Length: 307
Image (cartoon, rainbow, N blue to C red; front, top):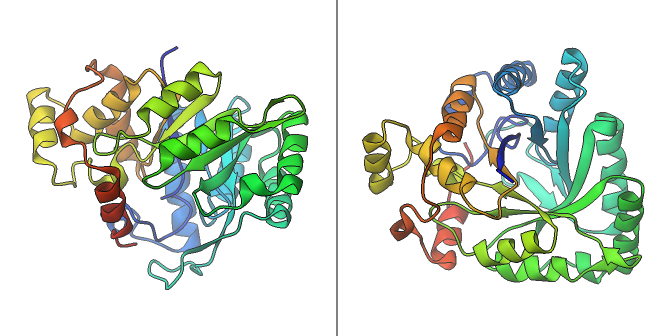
């Protein structure tokens, strides 16, 4: 099955984010300004065929904006995935000492599930643990796993996003969890891009096991966009008469494990440029020489500033 492009709302629901140049994308960082920008970007994505939208409780007002947009436009065939596990703490500021606080407790899941469900209703098809990492207690909490299974049995698929240099190991752990005689996690979301390919084999195993795969950070938080400084990518894009972001996403779309590849666009123009990836045919191993070790990649990512 060919992967599709979706739209992630991490940069659309709050004025601060760690994408390069984010502050210049949406100059009016007020709530009304962000809402208007979100609607414009969502409209552009829908017009170009995007039907999968990915949000999170910690993305500021992303779920609220998405719910309001769906209601205003009447789009009943939208497919929404969202995430729980962080609370937004930046107080609507571009810079803050702490932007979000992580908590993978059963009580936090129950509270955030109720909030997401109230906003998004039947459009919410997948609910994911947000950023499952080695320090997370989630898979050791039977009460939480039982609560997740009840949501799954009620018709909403359960997933998890993973993050950090040990993504492959974390994906393997998720695949081993069962509840009620069936796998608990039907979806996994992971970072895979030209610079960070280490999760690839684990994602292939997930795909073979029937798990759906969402790829996030295909542009490495803007480092693989036209704003980035990866010169071999810029040169290859110029040779192909395209943009670095479109070429980067085309490589992700070519991966056999990908079901949905998220654009993190924050403007109408970025959506249009990103979605040009669908018209490019590239080998899956293109520009493999750019790949960094996971430790280096994630250390550089952790050093990115919120703007």
